[in-house]
Image 1 (cartoon, rainbow, N blue to C red):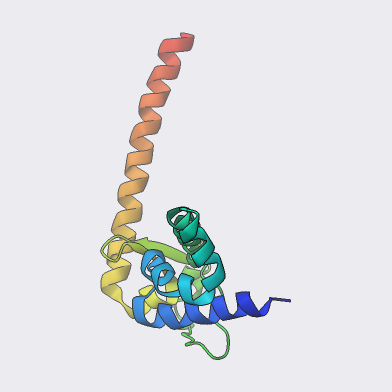
Image 2 (image 1 turned 135 degrees about the horizontal axis):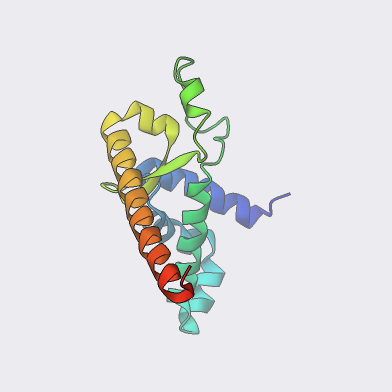
Length: 147
């Protein structure tokens, strides 16, 4: 069971997401001091406020990538049944949209074709970069092992 402090944190995160989207930095900046005032005050006093902020940003980035199921009091978007067979083949529930600088859940990508286009182009570019790097590593392996 979540502590009252954590419940408050998640509530504030959800409220901030409604304003900032899944931008971990903006959400962290809005919620950290209000959700954890004692921790923030101590971290600031001890000079660890940047480390605390970076930790919350890292946590939120991972949390947003998992695209958590929305609670009943949050917005809900259904994936049209005609698209379900395609969406079910995706390995992740959220994908990076470069123009936004954040991961976006698939239902929001469907609702925003411009974001979907950006996400697919970004993923393809990263895939091509990975294949190119793998080819160089293959070449290096052959040069090192003589195989």
